Image (tube, rainbow, N blue to C red):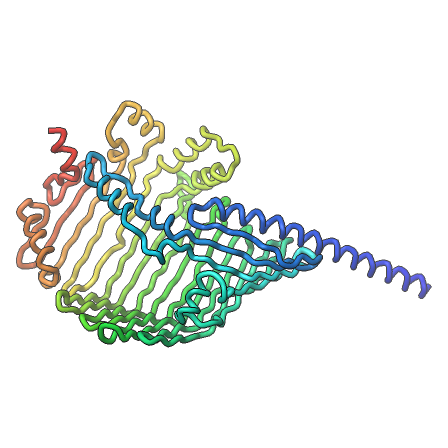
Amino acid sequence: MSSKFAISLLGLTVAAAVAAVGTSVYTARKLDEQIQKTIEQVNTSHVVRASWYLTSSLPFSRNGVLHLVFLNERMRENAKAVPVIHNDPESLQRVQEEMAEPLTEESRKPVELYINISNTTFPFIVKGTASLDMMRGTPGDLVKRKELPATLPMTLSWQYIAPNQDFGMRLSMDSWKIAQPDQDVSVGAAEFSLKGDLSDALELNYAWDGFKANGRYNGHNTVEIMPLDGSSLLRNFSGIWISPEGHMRLAGMKASASDGKFDMGELQFNSVMDEVVTETGTMLNMKHKLVLNKLALHSAQDQFDVEDLQLGVNFTGLNKQGLEELAAQMQAKQPDFMQMMKSLNKITTRTMRVELAPFRMKLNKAMVTATGKLETLPFEVEQVMQAAAAHTPDPFKYMIQGDLNFSAEMNAIQALPADVQQQLDVLQKQGYVKIDNKGLSSNMLLRGGVVTANGKIVDIEPTQMQEEE
């Protein structure tokens, strides 16, 4: 019996080993397919080109070099490709002149990165590491000019478990310094991690100890970015990744030069998305809030001191079912146009609202506040299409309404530059703003495509109206 048991145990062990080898080889092949698919997706971009060079292909590992080329010139062209203003030939001339500006030799060169990647495969598991080659590409040029150290104390590692799509990635960097004749640079330690289920949700955490540079050209110049940390939840929403919750804190920022100083205090940003069940369906609501405790800019021309700045922006009324159906259609190989229209109508037939909740700050010790909202009136997409077919100008503007109330105490107005104060005087004479010994105030309304300020109609298309006259 003992010999039969030993033979059976040996057989099971051999079978398990063969299965492990087979699944590891299968995992490696699937990894090859995924790498190729990712490279093809990256190369559909207009600004990045990617190449993968395999250096080692063993049954349980895949090692290679990922070559990335960022096309600076194309990026600059895309940034300048702004829409030309209708009935304004000068705007076309401005764009053409900007496009004709000669690029510097450095701007013409693409940014090239060579990343050494090593992957090890186990049954349905992939583990990998990556490092940036500092002797090749753009990093190599920067090292030669002594703008970067020859080695960066940075490591990147990841692990992916296929059965449950569990993913984890960690990027860490130790602090480093570099000294040049005209400046000293000190970069703080950083940590970045991403983990979770690739089919559902991922948690992002990051922290950075900051940055400091001391320059010795045109006098003494300093720039300091204080510690930064934050987190964000990423969720797979019908094939589209969104962030329903995020938090960020920047301890501050400072800069000084011979002609002035800049000092920013702690900055916080928080966002959250929740769901509310109503009679017309489940609605998605998003709340964003930014808080800045101080911002000072002191120079020969300007003296600004901002304190206790708070900006809240709430977005409400987005129909969840319509958005999910629309996202699914966008992912489909052959989207159903009629189904997309029905999904859009589920969104547009509900009122969506963007609201300041609220905005306030102290400018040179004087209070500045603003409240308001912009909302859509319920409509069906077919209405817009029919209006467009009937050559109705800007039919969408009749489906939006809003209001904005703005006020500022007198000391805040006096802190503004002289040319801005002159513009305010013009607006006061036109009746758009009210200025008295208490300060400035204005009430703006958008109704039926018409904007009014303090009851006066605002001419928002002067060029087009003049030509029509």
